[in-house]
Amino acid sequence: MTDATTPEFPDFETMTQADFEHVLPAMFENSPNGKVSSDPRLQKFLAKNPDCAALVRDLEIIAEQARSLFNVEEEPGDDLWGKIRGQMDADRDPKTK
Amino acid sequence: MSTQGVQMIEAKPNSGLFKRNPPIAGEAEAIEAAKNGDPEAFSKLYSLHKRRVYTLCLRMLGNVSEAEDMTQEAFLHLFRKLGSFRGESAFSTWLHRLTVNLVLMHLRKKGLNLVSLEETINPSDDDAPKRDFGSRDPILAGSVDRVALERAVASLPPGYRMVFVLHDVEGFEHNEIATMLECSTGNSKSQLHKARLKLRELLRQPGQTPQQAGLKEVTT
Image (cartoon, rainbow over all chains, first blue to last red; front, side):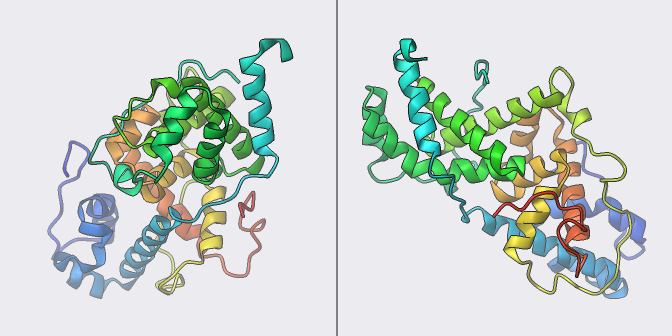
């Protein structure tokens, strides 16, 4: 997906770390499954810039782990339903408020 | 807290959220019975959805007490507005949107009201992620402990946390987030990237207690 906020990609052969930092959000946005590290255009650059490679890897791990949080659910306190029920009863019968 | 004026943003049939919220067996019957005032049916809806709603509130707010208050508000709002549910999207998607909108309204009332959220949710310079690449050591080493990530998310500045939770955890698209937060799509993308950078920074602080790392509240 591109829009007015998507920067133009630089020449991947001559890209600097600053260029990379600038386009990285768009690369994540445009990459399938958020896997920037497997983008063939970036392989040489990442091999030459291990700090950038580590950054990409870490951001991918964070995004991947975040997706798995969707299925992790927390339990509210046991007394919460009682509070809701009390308020519902008050809604039904305003005299009890 | 008044819940009037909450605007529901309709879920698109092809949104990631819809795909991740399939209908639940027995839910449709419970919805219809609850619409007709059956308290046991509403109790069933609460049992089916309390964890999703509470977890969403907890992640968006980073605070157990506020999360319980907002869960209560969400179900009371549901009780009052259930009649307006037409089944055009999955019920869980509808309830999810309702909850997100309530939490956002709550945050605006805490200090973000009447001002563009885009401006006010931006963190201070102190909270912003450092603009360096850090050590090349892949200290996240292929995985992130879930509890550590939850704690780090809870410690993010509200604007970062909101976009991160809505996009990376809940699966909303940037254009949907932009509508909800009343900001531009570009701002949503930028906030997400900064949130991930900030999380990396927080998770790269080995040996620190959550307090030393600036983590405010444990969410589990």
